[in-house]
Each structure stands twice: as structure tokens, then as C-alpha cells.
Length: 197
Image 1 (cartoon, one colour):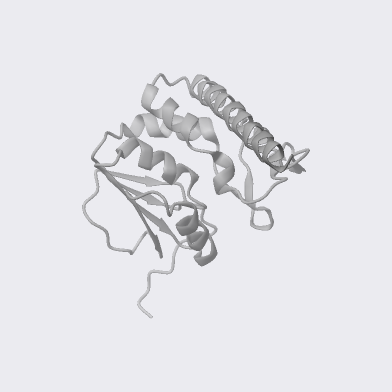
Image 2 (cartoon, helix red, strand yellow):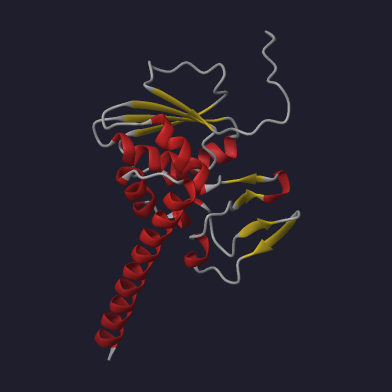
């Protein structure tokens, strides 16, 4: 009986993974349509990167207008596959970014395999993972995040990405190798203090 239960659990897990792959593919198509972008590589990256891996445990909070934050009905990742931002630190109004807006910006950046992309303001690393898919194994992504806690989460989230290096620091002043693309999606509340101290 124990062997059957273990087998049945594995079958259910595989079915769930298959379901989520279908949901991600539909999400990627929807995001591309909303962005009015026709780029198979960007669509594939959105379809392959599990958004839930970068957002912590659910239920998750999404803003609804005007100014209302609404939790997802449950901790089911299916609820994340909509063209909406998801809060990563609600009390600071920090979110993981609007998918179709990023699809549009990524298309404009025209990232190709083998390039070096510097990503400033990585949050928890979801779009960094998408950039890593676009640069491929022959490329690299330098991810810079000012917030130490977010940088730590990003390092954990991207540990399996061999072509990504995560640095905690100020993207304005941090040195990095020559880049083909610098992709910035950092929020600011005031100008950076650039005076020598």
C-alpha cells in the first residue's frame, strides 16, 4: 500500500507540473499579445521561468485599482499567471514588475545569445532569470540590487543559473565589465547621495 501511495503521489506531482507548464505557455502568449510583441525567444523565456519561484510562499498580494491590495484566493501558483504585478514588499509598494511592460522593453533591447546584460534593480530575480534565458549559456547577466535582503533572496533564487552573478550594491556606482545591454528597472524615492563621505 505504501508503494502505491508513493506512486500515486508522484503521478499527481507530474500532472501538476504538466498543468503549470500549460498555464505558463498560455501566460506567455497573453503577455506577448498585451505587449504587441512577436518574439518567440521572449515568449519562450516567459513560458519557461516559474514566476512562483521568485515570489516566496503564497497567497500573494496584487494591487487592484484604485489603491486596493488583494490577496490571491489561495497559494496556488496558477493565480500568478496574469498580466499583473505581484507585491514582493507590500509595505514599501515594491512589486516584481508588470509582465507585458517588460516584454515590450525586452523586445526593444533585442538581447541575443552570448551577450553580457547588466540588470540593475533586480528585486527577487524573476526578470533576471528571463534575461539569463535570452543570453543563453554563452552569455552572462550581472544582477545588481541595492536592498541587501532582496539581493540575498535573488542569490538564492538564481543559484541554479550558471550564467548569472548577483551583487548587492548601488547600480549607479558599482563597477562591472563592459555590457551589451544595461537593463534598469529600479524604483527610487529620492536621488542617490553621490557625495563622498
